Structure formats: C-alpha cells, structure tokens
Length: 275
Ligand SMILES: Nc1ncnc2c1ncn2[C@@H]1O[C@H](COP(=O)(O)OP(=O)(O)OP(=O)(O)O)[C@@H](O)[C@H]1O
Figure (tube, rainbow, N blue to C red):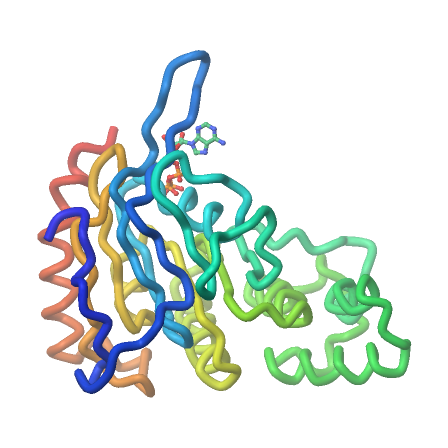
C-alpha cells in the first residue's frame, strides 16, 4: 500500500462512503533550491474526512509541513491536485487556520487583546468582540486571565491563548504544525486532551503534524505515516481507540501499546537514517 491510501472511504462502522473535505490526488511538490530540483513529496493520495483529527508523522524533512502548506494554498502542487470541499485549493484557502510551534502572540497586547485580533480585523462592534473573547477564554480555560500579558503566562497558557485566537477566526479546518513541540511532557498531554475535546465539541477538521508517534496515536482518529525523502505515504491507519478516549490512561491501554509498537516498526528504519 506504499504511497496509497486505501481507496474506500468507509466510515469507522464500515457503513457508508463519505466525501472527503480535503483530498490530495497524486500530489507532488518540487522546489528549486540553488538551481537544483528538490522533490519534497511525491505520489500523495490522501483523503481527509470532515470532522476527523488526522495526524501526520514521519522523519524530518519528509514533507509533512509542505502538505499543510498546500492545503492552505500557500504552496502550489507541482503534480496532481489538492481539492478542498470539491474544488481545487486557491491561494489562499480561507477555510483553514494555521497553528505552529511558535505562538506569535503580540507581547504588547494582553490575552484578551491577542484573542480579539481576528474579530477586530473582521470589524465587529466592541460589545460583540468583548463577549466573544470572554467565551473563547472560557473555552480554552483562560477565564480570569484576560488582562495578563504573554510574558506573564506559562507555556501552556500561551498555547491556549494562541488556540483561542485561532478559534476566533472560526476556521473550518485547523492545520497544526507541531504546536506542542516546545512544551514539557505533562503540559503537552494536557493540551492534547484539550485539543481533542475542543475539536470534537466544535466539529473541527484537523490535520496535525507531529514528530512524536505517541502524540500522533493519542490524539488522532487516523494516523498517516510518511517515509523517506522525497516523502511518500507508507500507510494510513485507523487509530483503534474510542473517540472519547482517556489520554491520561493510554499508556496502560493494550490497543494503544500495540498500535504504537506497529507504527514504530514502520518508522524506525527511516528515523535511523536521519543524520
Ligand atoms: N519553501 C521551500 N523552499 C525550498 N525547499 C523547501 C521549502 N519548504 C520545504 N522545503 C524542503 O522540502 C523538504 C520537506 O520539508 P518539510 O518542512 O515539508 O518537511 P517536514 O516533514 O515538515 O520536516 P520537519 O519534520 O523537519 O519539520 C525539505 O527538504 C525542505 O528543506
């Protein structure tokens, strides 16, 4: 199945076909670097289902971020096509929101001021902005911190603030590129729990890139494993854990242990080849 996702898009219960929200059809991306071609990804066939959390894991440089950038319409595919809700992705895809490792909070604005930015850009009236900011702070567990400045926040609180700002744009799809990589293990787990809970509550579709296989399994409904350079899809697996899984207890879960061990066998050779 190398380079190919299973053709059928049956639901978890196997009952029905679903139209993908995002589809990569035979996608390749080649960059020119100092006059030389560099094939970042090739032969990518991938369907992202509406409302799912799809995690992408693979060795460094296999093109995970490149795929997110193509879904966002920031990079154009050099082969194949990227489809969003039935139409080719245009520069830029306004239905997606991006979150990266660095939170890009404005240091001179407090928490409420940072979260308000997209609402101010939209030109909403002040009363509505205040009410929406309050709700968003509550959603991400930052109630009472509206007047705090980014340098007064812990790493996890900064992430929550960045997440609330992202949600203020109300994107249909969240593209998350190693958003929790800089957090310590405990905070990271708390954010994983929050992202799963929030995205299920709000019905968001998520493409989530991570280097961390445990994280990919813990938060994903499905997990895409990449290999090589150029990046190709080795396999797409259903994560055999319930949607309302208890992330804190996963280490003791037999299904979790088995799936991470299986995926590690796929990834390990590629990781061993990383310089
Ligand atoms: N704008 C660009 N111009 C030239 N080369 C690029 C550009 N963006 C990415 N690349 C190259 O494409 C390849 C894939 O990069 P990409 O960042 O997508 O991989 P990745 O899997 O996300 O890596 P990592 O896990 O290290 O973040 C790399 O060799 C990278 O150097």
